[in-house]
Length: 253
Ligand code: 13P
Image (tube, rainbow, N blue to C red):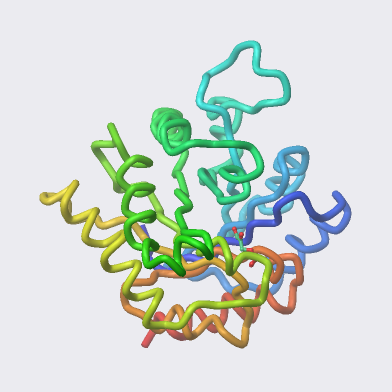
């Protein structure tokens, strides 16, 4: 699996027309790079149309969420088996799912297991609130989220972890390089080494939260960080393609 990765999380944005225009432009302009993965995550209703535009392209598709069950009476939900074959990736445990929809570490863990069972590659999101950061608990919170999110996951080869400090999402505020490095090493890297002491495949680790072309290199310059998970800027073709180019350049060095 190539390591550098840039993921656009469109959230509940874009009309179908805007979505198709955006991916068509990305497909035309991004040179296929076998050493990196670029993923767009549209809202569910657009996944099929977007995947048609991206046929024969190296750009991959991810879903923004899924339910843990295979099927059943879960009105409004979408299962991993429904997404398999349409999407390669699925974002799980995004802070908006945790805070607005009450998703717990346990529930997210069941989804991670179900995603893997369905052949999907989970992007597990973790991150602390401002209050948790201010009280010095960021690493502990992130550790718990990683540990719980990966419970019962024996093979982490297809897992990606995205560190997104909640207070940095959509706010324009960003953490210092040192703070991100510290939390990723103690809250993510060390935990992975503890749980998977024999694994040679440490999951890819992304940073997310107010990423722009101006600040992306702050994060991707860190050898522990393999790429970025981009929200707002992924809706703008110019910004997203600059973020892709800058990340690939930083990772090529
Ligand atoms: P922004 O890039 O808009 O801060 O969103 C980050 C995010 O939540 C990506 O999942």
